[in-house]
Amino acid sequence: MQISLKGRNGVILGVANKRSIAWGCAKSLAREGMRLAFTYVGERMEETVRGLAAECEGSIVLPCDVTKPEEIDSAFASIAKEFGHLDAVVHGVAFARREELQGDFHSLSKEGYMIAHEVSAYSLTAIARRALPLMEGREGSIVTLSYIGGERVIQNYNVMGIAKAALEASVRYLAADLGPRGIRVNAISAGPIRTLSASGVSGFTEMLDNIAEKAPLRRNIKADEVGDTCLFLCSDLSRGITGSTIYVDAGYHIMGV
Ligand code: NAD
Image (cartoon, rainbow, N blue to C red; front, side):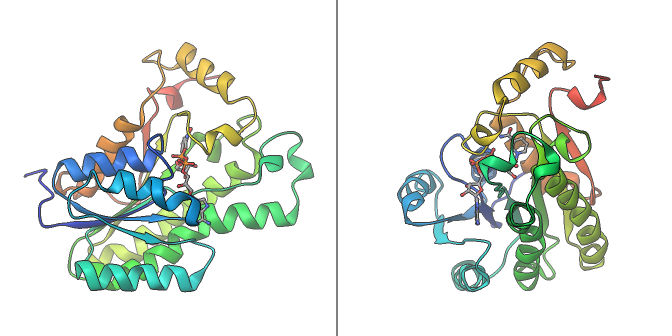
């Protein structure tokens, strides 16, 4: 069984800059020969994403705000035209308003709830539906990024915790739905990493310190380590795995408080 991804195509949603976990995933996939389509949100991000994509041979860059169905359709139409088929989808997209990532959970507004769930959870299903025709007969792999705050109460993670619970449930339902077509769907539950999104979570530095103190490996993890697990999940080496959440968190999830 080989890990080489030559001749395979993937789409990566969620690269904002070189700290993004999705960029760690992109580097691992490109290293093994996968051709990649990168998506970005808004004109401000385009230049940075184009700069990073230039490091990955043969890649293309497309706008795709997951709250805009017409933009998703257009991105996948371009992918179909350029690539013909898809073997992998990496979903590294999440958003919640800053005020919803601190303070009392019970003050969560309906609007804040809806925004976080639309971008961070529903989008996985919306993207999978568009990818499906391009993955038919390909034994494709869909990978998303989660966090332990979807299973346990993590201070200040609040609305994103329930969005991650919905995301992980979506992984199981999609895996059951798409498995008969040979498409696998899995999540990576990553330990905390200092990224643009993470900077919105109040008390993030304390979260990092807590992991370094309590996780079995006594350290935090790097985006590259998530990237290599993503590579495994997008390769034939993981061909028997679907519907799973795999932890890349220095072992933190096995510990008591
Ligand atoms: P990041 O800020 O680099 O990436 C988040 C991405 O989501 C950005 O590229 C942003 O453009 C994109 N995004 C936001 N709204 C969007 C929209 N409407 N349409 C399309 N894209 C949109 O941060 P990150 O930490 O690399 O986050 C990637 C994923 O990893 C997220 O799902 C996050 O919850 C998850 N995660 C992060 C950590 C962490 O500690 N950083 C830990 C576990 C899981």
